[in-house]
Length: 55
Image 1 (spheres, helix red, strand yellow):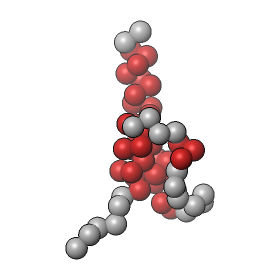
Image 2 (cartoon, helix red, strand yellow; image 1 turned 135 degrees about the horizontal axis):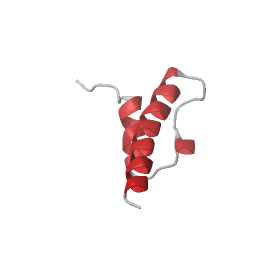
Image 3 (cartoon, one colour; image 1 turned 30 degrees about the vertical axis):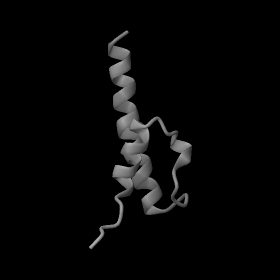
């Protein structure tokens, strides 16, 4: 049994791999698009914050 991929986790992984938010593979306006974007933003924001602290 294979579970559907979690868009939130996919977005987080994309951000960790430096894939831009514009690369969201889901249809704009869909729930999956919003979840992917939220996951991406969470990781991207954390990365930006940690980079700012190390300056």
